[in-house]
Image 1: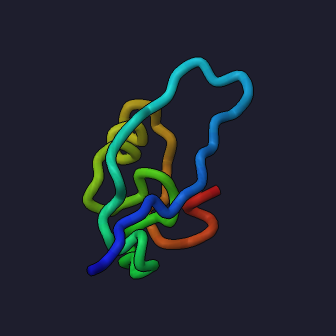
Image 2 (image 1 turned 30 degrees about the vertical axis):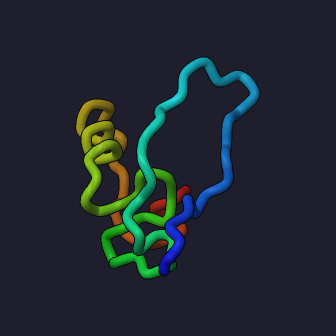
Image 3 (image 1 turned 30 degrees about the horizontal axis):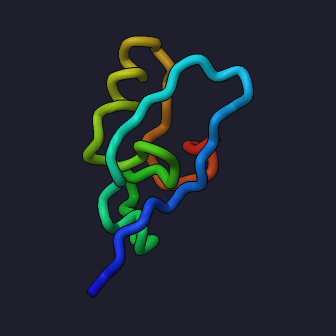
Length: 72
């Protein structure tokens, strides 16, 4: 049996007023088998829409790739 766990520690900045609560990332995140278009960050699945929608709405120019640059 394979155990699916959330791969990221909780991160809530001190002055936070709102949280986005979602589901576990795909199993490949727990296994460390991300694909080239995943970002190793919360909601970083290439199949997810959160960051893609925010990128369009807020014109963030995010990079969707498995790199440190994309995370930062």
